Length: 580
Ligand code: ADP
Image (cartoon, rainbow, N blue to C red):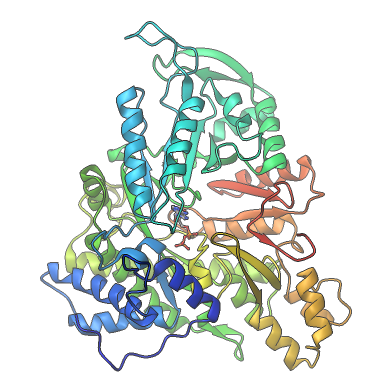
C-alpha cells in the first residue's frame, strides 16, 4: 500500500528517535537506513491492516484501517511488541515476542529445543523452557549405561548457544528457565546463579505450588520426584528450601518464583495440555510450542489532568482498535516452526497491557504508594480487560472463535465465544516505553532524572517531563533544584520541593516493597495472563523483607514474583549518578 502524503506527524522525543533508528528502522547491506520513522510506522500499519483481507467480512477499507493503526502508533497511544515493529511487512515477518518450547528427556529433543530457540532468537523473540522433564544428574541413561548430566548442565549449553546468536545486532536473546520445586536437582538449580555472570542469558524461576507453600507454613517435608519413573527419590523440608530461595533472591535477584498451579487454574485450554513455563520476563505463561504477541497502551496519553480523570471513551476506542491490531498480527506473522504455527492458530492468544502507569499517576497527582492508586489501578485494568474481551467477542462474530474454543473453559461454561483464548498481559515494555516516552509497564519511575544505558553502553539522560512541568508551575524549577534531582533521583527529602509534590513524585526507591507488590496484585486481578513487575528493594533490605514479599505474593493471588535489591549486582541497567 502506497504511503499517503497527508499522514499526521510523529510525536517522538529525541531519545525515542535515536532508539528507533538504531534498533527498528530497516537497514541496507551497508547499514544505511532504508526508511524514515514515519515510513516505518506506515510499513507496520499497512502490513497489519493488509492481513485482514483474508477475511470475508471487514468493516474497514484497507487504507482506512491502516491509517487508524498508524495514528494509534504515531500518537504513541499504543505500540505492538518490538518484533512486530521490526519485522512487519518485511521478509522475516516474525512478529511475536514470547515463545515457550518443550524440552524432552532425550538428546534429540534437547538439541532440537536449542536449535528452535536459535531460530526464534534470530527473529527477535524470547524463549521460555521448563527443564523439569529432564532426568536428574547422575541418574542412569538406558541406551548407553552411563549417567545423565542433568538439567543444570544442559542449561549451560542453552545459555552458550544464545550467546552466539546475536539477533541481527539488535537483540541478544532472552530466556526463561524453569524447574519444578520437586525436581531432584532443585537445590543446585536454586544456587546456580551464585557466581555473577553465570547463565547470563537466562532468568530463572522455581515453579512452586500452593501445596508447597502450605508445607512451608507447617514446616513439613515434601517429596522429590524423579521425572521418568514419577517415583519419590528423596524428601526436603519445605521451609529450608524456601529460606534458600529467599537467600539467593536477596543475594542476586535470581531465581524468582512462579505459582504453577495457579497459572494452570487460569489455563483457558487445559484440553491441549498443561502450562509448564512462561516467556523470559514471566508475564506470559504459554503451552509448549505456543507463541504470543503483546501490545501496550500508553495510559499517560489518556490523562485528563484538569478533570483529574481519564478519557475513558478514548481509552475504550483504543483498546478495541488495539485488539483488532493484535488479532491481525497473528495472521500476519510467519512463525519459525510448523508446530508453533498450529498451536498459535488454535488459541490465538494476545496480550494487551499498559505502560505509562506511573506517569498517569503523576499527571493526576496521585501517589503511587497510596490506596487511591491501587483502586484506580484496579478500575483501569478491569475496564481494559472488559473492553478487550468485548472487542474479542466482536471479532469472534466477524471471524469465528479461536479454533480450540469449543473444548476450552469458555466453551464449556458458555462464556464466549471469543476470538482469543487470552486478551490481557502486562509486559515490561523495556524499549516500547522509550519509544512512547513514558514510564515502563506498571513500574514506578526508577528516578525523576536518570541516565539510561542502552545498547552497547550508549547513555541517555532523561528528566521526567511531568515533574519538570509541575516544578515550573509551582515556580521552583531552579537549575540548582534540577541539578540536585539529577544527582539524587528522588525529591522525597528535598526541602526545596513543596510537601504535596514530594508525596506525589515518588520513585521506585521511595516506595516500600509491599507497595510494589500490592500494585502487582491489583493489576493481576484483572489480567488474563500475568503481570511483569520487579519489586525493587533498597540495598539495606533484609532476607526477612524478601520472605514477607514472597508470602504476600502468595496471599494476594500473584502468579509469580521477582525481587531486586539495589546494588546486589555490579552491572545495573538503570542507575542515578549518585549510585554509579
Ligand atoms: P519491548 O518493549 O521491546 O517490546 P518488553 O520489555 O516488553 O519488550 O518484553 C516483552 C517480552 O519480549 C519479554 O518478556 C520477552 O519475551 C521478549 N524480549 C524482551 N527482550 C528480549 C530480548 N533481548 N531478546 C528476546 N526477547 C526479548
